[in-house]
Image 1 (cartoon, rainbow, N blue to C red):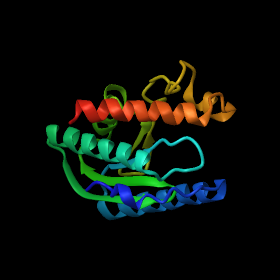
Image 2: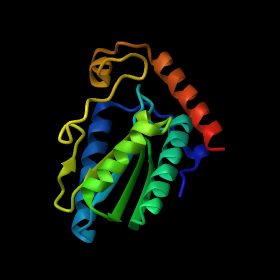
Image 3: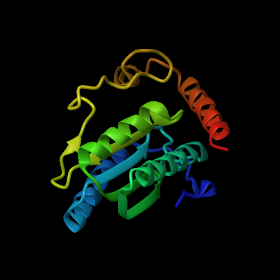
Image 4: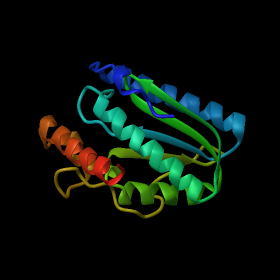
Length: 182
């Protein structure tokens, strides 16, 4: 169920809107966990800058959703329910999956590390009890910056790179993924 590219809002998002969106995502996650009692995949794209919903981010999201669904199918894990939201704060996907949460997280990390666009995805896995399985809990290193070898969080916090350079790198990665998966 890919998101339509032509419906992207291109709206500049404020910090309060972004924080409210994260709170709303947590409420959705808790509702799903209570309803299904299964591990949950919460999938978003990483988008630098004030515009979180564009054709670029939606295309990256659609690649990720397709890759996730393929990985789950290969592992014979059943998706009990899924939903995709095209929000002005960025695309979000939720998938309730009948599978062991640690195995789901390992599969998510493999996608993030092996797929050309994996660096642009944020694939959270929540246990049925609501615990988020993190990279650090699995003793994995922090994500690297798109443009240098530093910790991505440090570069983002310090705004170490021009937004145009980051978006250009995202376009290059998307072009590579389009050609690999054509």
